[in-house]
Image 1 (cartoon, rainbow, N blue to C red):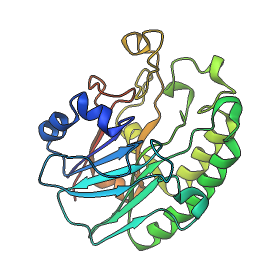
Image 2 (image 1 turned 120 degrees about the vertical axis):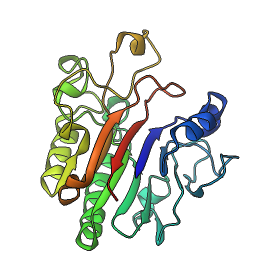
Image 3 (image 1 turned 90 degrees about the vertical axis):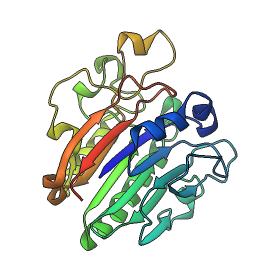
Image 4 (image 1 turned 135 degrees about the vertical axis):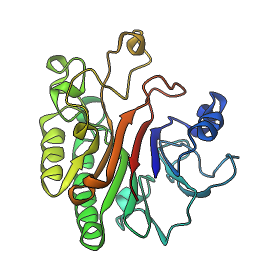
Length: 248
């Protein structure tokens, strides 16, 4: 089974940059899109069940899943209105696992939303733990945090910036220790692998980036993971798509 997760930074803008062709060419079993910024699904390639969880605020946030297989159930949000109005979590249940698409909040300029993000993190952790008691969980997400120093090009100059604060990184450490694994690091231990580059300063061409996008899975499910990698050369957003291939 092939899964693709991608922060498209606006689904309509991404469609204008080739998203439909990407969907057709990759032939994934499911696509998890973050930051769709659209209240309703635009016209997309056929052959998929489409699930949409937009933000109430127009042109903001929102997640979507395209799945070839019809899920057993679909849940929008986490049951907490403060976070659910931003359209950040969409969960599909399948026979062998839960598939969770999540777009984590950004801590923001001056860390003005750090408290909001940490609150979201706590609720999300409890949400995933409850799912994990029933069956394994696969999370495809823009976590909006670089976990380790090797996950961004300039760790020293970003030590107190959104996406690399001690609080955000500490939560990610704690979350993984509760029975989850960063699947990419099961295959690649080295530095220089990023999923996000600012549009400024020719950052992508220079590979001055951040690894903000992850497939995280229940540890007991990792043995079924065949591949986890980044499609670093695919453009259409300031993020690159990531891929997870599993035996399921």
